[in-house]
Amino acid sequence: KILHDEQGVPWNEMLILARSFNKLIQPLHEAFQQAGIPYRAMVREAVWQRQEVRDVVSLATCLADADHGPALLAVLRGPVFRLTDGEILLVSSWNEGRSLGQNLYQVAQGNNPNFPAAAEAWQHLSEDRKACVCSAAIHLHNWRQLVDRMPHHELIQNALEASGAYEAMAAWLTPLGTGAESVRRSAAGIDFVINRMREIESARPITLVNLVELLGLYASGGIKEDIDPDLSTDEDMV
Image 1: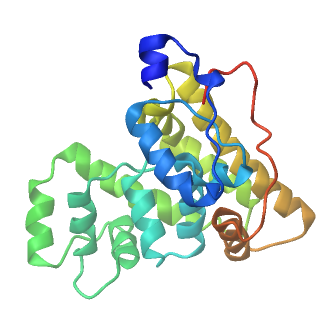
Image 2: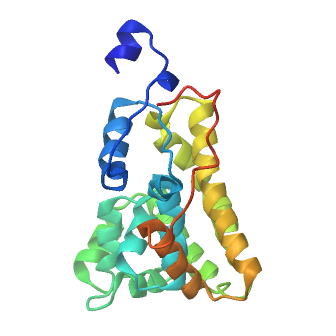
Image 3: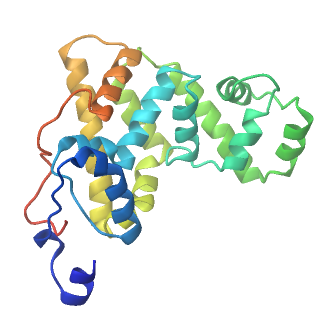
């Protein structure tokens, strides 16, 4: 960063070599994101570590499994629904003894909370935030009704478009680039995983549950990838 900011060295004249790069992907991603350094990893496995790609995989996972807690939390607080932790906690306590997924279904059905603390918190929530919580619950319910009834990649793409996630991802990922470049990079990451889903579906009939399992193997490195095809020599990135 000093070389770039103080000495004017272009980002694309810098290269990081590592003997075991897979172990460094996440730490480097976090460090570069915090410093606002644009970069591109030279292995396609690194694409699966991009936040926007992980968000898409989380969306597919929670639609395939309504009770997958980590994926559901990622979708609710991420760019798809953008709920606060307090709002998620409120929903999780909607009906005592039920899971977050089950309570979201109660919200989608228009049922009021029967747990006193949740009822009080709901009363103090602003009308616009109530609408956001209800919208998230209804969207999830409606999307789940379409699972295995339409192409999976179309379902995910339609969900992203309906939720405004594309715009939210671009805004949240600004540290990875600036302006149009940030939008392009987040869109490229989303297109990558949507296209991979399309490729898998075109090869053979597959349920969303099994498709999510395959995506998980790609994300974990269980299925190896080649060089990232999205590299461009005219981009100013490390």
